[in-house]
Image (cartoon, rainbow, N blue to C red; front, side, top):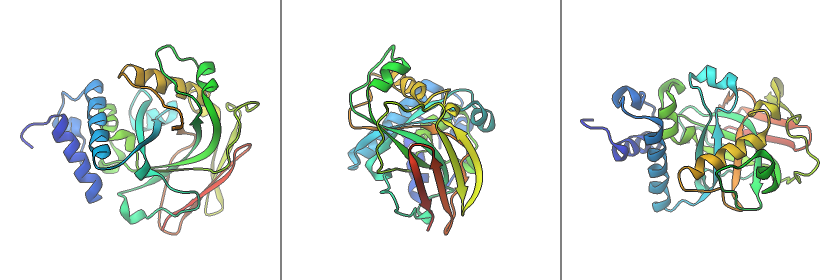
Amino acid sequence: MAEWTIDTTVGELLRRERGREDGGKITDRWPALDLGTAYRVQDALLDRKVRAGQTIVGVKLGLTSRAKQRRMGVDAPLTGWLTDAMTLPPGEPVAVGELIHPRVEPEIAFTMGARLTGPGVTAERAMSAVESVHAGFEVIDSRYRGFAFDLPDVVADNASASRFVVSGRAVSPGGLDLAEETCRLDVDGRTVDTATGAAVLGHPANALALAANGLAERGMAIESGWIVLTGGLTDAVALQPGRTISADFASLGVLSLTGT
């Protein structure tokens, strides 16, 4: 490509997503792509999807644990958008062939009862806007080869967003100690990882506040009724046809996802 711009980057990322193929880092071809420009790419990508008929249903956070930041070679959490086209009803299998190289991570998810807008949102204020808490899974699917990217790359790629599911069991946030909420991750009945809510910036409310304050810098807010995925609690697990991944939460219940 002769010249890289916001529009051409959006076009390239959409081409990869629709064609179910990965590619090299955009920053290798467009070294001037910085974090601020990457978020403008992300918003333009969302606008293209909305104009095609999709509806915004929430936001997601990514790379909220230090361990995952080190593993992916980045140094900060990030946010992305969720649309109705990404939503999976509980119990519905994931068509792996529609994706590139999907991975699944368990998350604590919020349904918002009130609009949350920054700047200056604290964890306490963030939780006061939450209507219910759910067990969740995010299916991430990077459009970069081998999930290899720099921070601007993954931000532009809408934080690897692909599919997500939240449990139909809604738990009131009152009385929950989400920092101590345990999660056991099983693959085909075998435990592969465990974590607590503290893996997400010390407490999922900190992730929610970070998202609200970050969106405020872009003139946006988290709307009532939206879903917020607060970030992976454990390492992401590859999703394959016939593989069942389950997350057993102490208070939020059990959620399972199967590839087909």
